[in-house]
Length: 312
Image 1 (tube, rainbow, N blue to C red):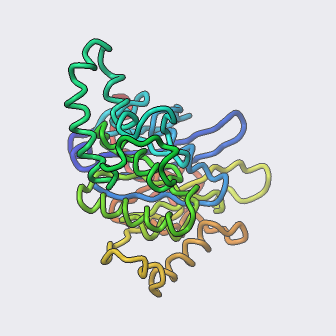
Image 2 (cartoon, rainbow, N blue to C red):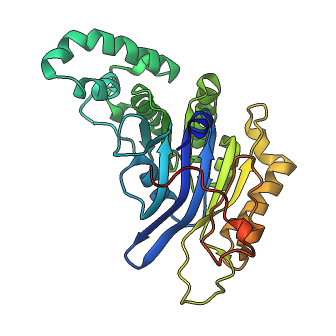
């Protein structure tokens, strides 16, 4: 991988395929992400959103292709990728504070943890202040609301200082009012710190409201291979949109341009009766590219130049 590419992009995925036996889930996945972007990923049920997340986390291996973070192969799960799931990753018998510092204490020898506890606590309280939870630090998770528990989980992930914060349907279990509060909260947090976020959701409105960029992953498309059961296709990125951030308000969700884009994405990515050809994908984002397999597109120009030497 070239130094220029490594300095320009924090996350690079090129020509990634993922299959489970005969079932092809992801096909020709290509994307680049700059440091500080808030990327949301949407797509119909079964398109492989969570699979893509697990590949970036290093929980699973690609069938073929490349994933790099800061110029290095993604490797096994580590603290450079924090993760927040829909179900809160909190231990019910530990206080809010102890849940937040747990990762810190587990990474060092037991005999060192006691002497460093004050430093861990001081740092954790800074994060709990940011989460508006400092006054609840002594409570157990069961004493908190769902939204408050999710904020603890976010603090738990951020204190490890990940390069990328991964979020997999983090607000899916919340009621609509709390969910909107958490959407605004995570945007305020991101706007203040500009850490990189990779956010998977099934909720298109949520994705458009949160993201500075949206990837639409879908298995509903066609190409030069034709159609029929004999053609085994995996999901591709069928659209890659830049989303200009407007003044933070839930009113954005009712703006005409917001509703028009939501309808366009729903048609192109979610409708099995509307099969876009690969040549018609909306990949006009300046950082978007693709590596179609031979015979999928109309011309040889569809295969973009190799981003790095595969032999390295």
